Length: 178
Image (tube, rainbow, N blue to C red):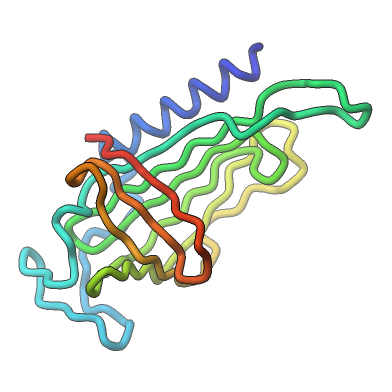
């Protein structure tokens, strides 16, 4: 029971941090000159490669299933929550927190983004991992991450952001958090 309470509180903290804009100091806010070829850059306030409907906080959370011990006995529910914050300067932050078998802790990715048509490009990514107590995997900070490309669209007006990786048919949906 205390594990579930810890996970729920952690999800609330992550959502609160994203909505409040906390940790914005960890993300570069000066867009500078993009390093990626083909990126359209026209300076702060006039970015033609930013979708203003995308700017803001987006999140989702829920139960993923049950955790069992080696004997098959139920030991708790696996929870996860994930959120994005897209800033108007072309930077973003993604956080996922989980208590399952793949993620037991908080993963944080920050980098830059741009859009072209219905494609969302995430690049110059840095990944950090903050494990829960007892996790065997060591924490990491600002390790280089892979670029990602998604097809994106909005549902319910602009209240739901749908993302589909170009390498998959699986669609993830995130709800506006502010």
